[in-house]
Image: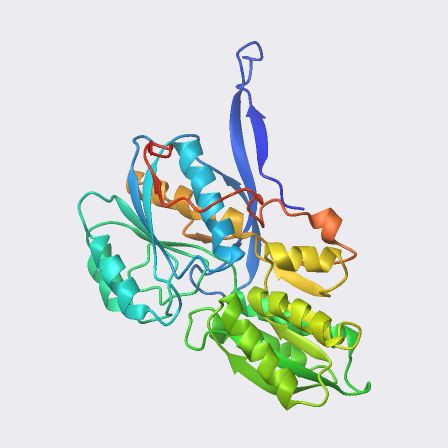
Length: 358
């Protein structure tokens, strides 16, 4: 269960003085920054109390089509409020829209912005522009993996481990030598920064099982696109035992299997957590999903950006520890740090930690 902790810091011999609340985040950091293959070490991260000024951040997302990036947005909004900083958010509309995000990133060079937070649509498609802007202001990467040239800090987790967690879960149910099972795989948009690493981790762990990969379908992580891909696989194959893929793929699979009367025959595993996936796990419709706590990643990215602006950035790469949510662990892990409240709507503009008046 992820909790953001407030620690009371009282100076020695001054117990009568009101204590200052310090916020501490339980994170992990790679021993070699920007190298997700390096071992992770625990990190008791002491967050800033307040920004020195209402700095203005330029924030870029691939899209806001699914609840994952909505949860990242919630974390950023909460942290911007806590620190008292401003931001403008721009979303590219989907992973195929590299040119649009490149234009948005170029606009972040405007002198009105003090730093950039980049959730990229491409691993290396923005490198040249990132390096140009990095000469003007800090660029912080968040969530999606990216070529680290020009990046000052990263708030992220190893996406290879997200895929590995899903593959490891299936291997645990179907160890090598047991009866073979057929798996259909929906990794996400081909070419996106995180998908290649999810694929590597998933394939490595699945190879240790009796599972056979019988179909792979790439596609943008919008629900409509994933519905078409899941339907296509089920129409083409006589027997599928597992549907495994992104949050929208898992969400699509639940309703499609129910409509086809296959809910008891085909199992679902997601490679990340969303509101619909969380509900599916709690109701026994989805077996498992790793969570990388996107709310926390959003908060950390904003906090890192403020530190970079103010010249006190000491941790340049960190993120939450990945946990696997199942029916057995869903209540213990909970939704805090992973999911935005159900009532939350995306916020694109804040000024001094507040939403501007309509």
